[in-house]
Length: 241
Image 1 (cartoon, one colour):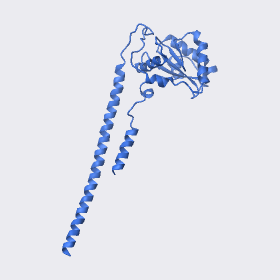
Image 2 (cartoon, rainbow, N blue to C red):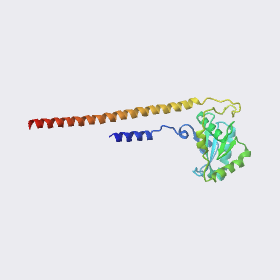
Image 3 (cartoon, rainbow, N blue to C red):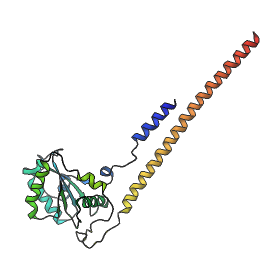
Image 4 (cartoon, rainbow, N blue to C red):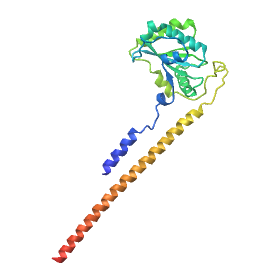
């Protein structure tokens, strides 16, 4: 019985989400079709498919950013020729402050100060902003990353280096002035949520242990009572003999 209780508790601990995955819970991304739609850019992606082999374009953008829209318009224009080679993972950082730590993580990994959006990362190459002069370099970066057997895992390194140092000022499109905004509230809410879930789990786990222990003790008591009754009967039988 005790072994069953131990196995049950180990299984519960193993299955419980003690740690929240950053990608799924902290950062909010959109793909190419979603951001083209959001920006109101006319597009036809009926022949476009995302696959595991494609190069990933990490795009940090801001809603209403003209340069971001220009970059997306460019990407949309090369889909017929290059669409099979790339896919987009986009993070909005002007309004969605939860994405800011990830941008800071990319900044640390690439050892570059991010001064505005768009900030574009393809493999181990980055583009601090967008202009037409980058078009050919971006195409080359896409093909270079696509042809690699082992794709760059910069997202994992960025997550490890993520921190909440503020986010890009939407009024100016860059943080050259050094003005930052507090992003601690979002992280505090996430931390509080994890703590509460842990407390709930502990309460449930404790309740299960108490219930199982009560049932086990009850059965032991019943067995002892049965044994005592049988012993008394045996003693009585011996006396009568």
